[in-house]
Image (cartoon, rainbow, N blue to C red; front, top):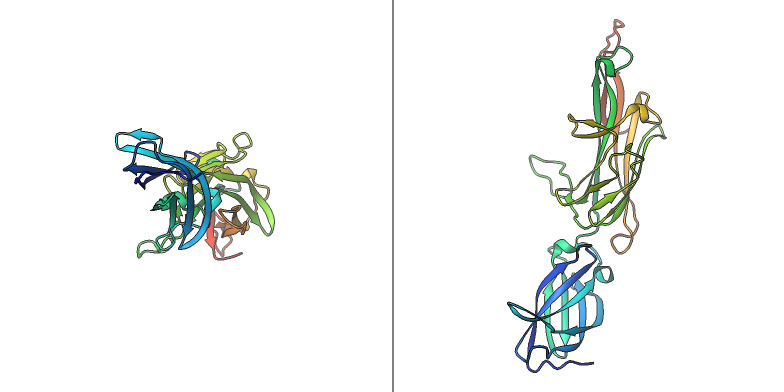
Length: 300
């Protein structure tokens, strides 16, 4: 059914993201004509980077009023038109037309950054001393804290040649993380599922932290905690006694992340770091090693 606007015009004045980040609500204000005169079907299209990606028709009415005047609303399901991350050179633009009254509006890019482009990771050693250590060592590696960063690449700076990714507040993805030695699994972290910035996983009764975390609001870091607090590394670590393999040698820490359509094409984003767990401090005269260390290396 076509609508009669009685010489009115329509202007998209605002867009609001739903609390679950699944829809965008457009506020459309009417000027001219009679309040409530605008009702019928709205032709809606969304373009991304200059290419039309979605068209539809939906019921519309200017049937609301506030201190600014008369308005109506349209709700856009993001899953229907999302193509890739919004960017300065690839914006999402929505167009509406109701019986000849039309307007266009650039959607908020922050609401439409959903596709992960970069993953980084790190395994930090928790160091024990004295009675924490076996074998007469003064200090030793008693566990590792696992951390990841997920988001968009940042340009390196003179004082930061390897910057962490910029956060993605509303990204949905699944992540797996494995620490292994010579192909043998030492730690296999429970699968982490992230939906709209809320990460959940099986904590296994506290073995792997609380089983939940927030991602994106305050940075791109997603820690993978263990069961023991360590204020030096600033997180909970996974005790070495709980590893399936914990002998000396080279360890590979690999994180794999996937996204389902439309956010991604299920192609895995993988990040790997390598670490040597070694004894040190001895000498050629046969003096015993005095401590253990966990050193990042280029490969195993």
